[in-house]
Image (cartoon, rainbow, N blue to C red; front, side, top):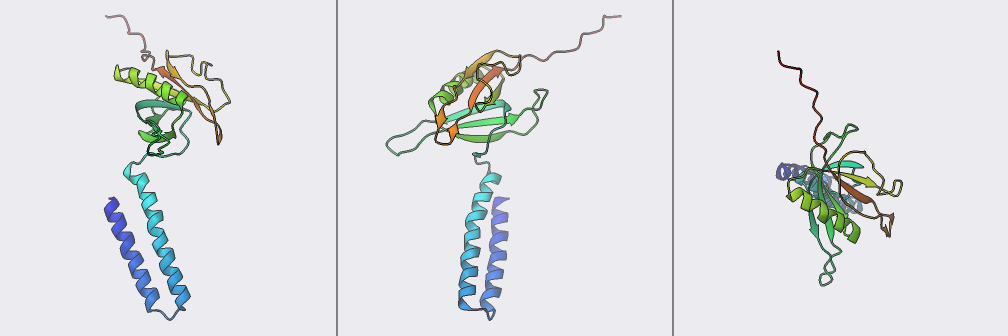
Length: 184
């Protein structure tokens, strides 16, 4: 899919550039068209990252089902700041999964990493987890749902962009089933 989109884009740009080069436009206009069309290759590549499943740095939903976590610790040798990757699905108001899984990338911080390690240990044991984010509006210790047992939570550190989100992970409570009618 991605290769087909890239080829289609390249063919259209090549045709447009060929038409503009064969025209009687001024040389500056032709060179400008070549630079602008070439710049769109970079824009198209960045847009294709979303199609290829690269993790997004967009704001995570406030409530989500956690599927998995991967952490890349900071490396002073390569000056890599580190990242934490969350594979999540958004939850609706009833606490049910409301979207397909999506990968999110967050910058490394110690509090989030500790909460993520605790949550990853619970996931490894087979416990389904829901995650909750507060962005300074709600204290992390506050019970956001009234359900489920807490697994890990992070404090809300303050970064360059202001207060960072704090995470709380809770075990998903077992579903409540309606009572069975008596036999007979």
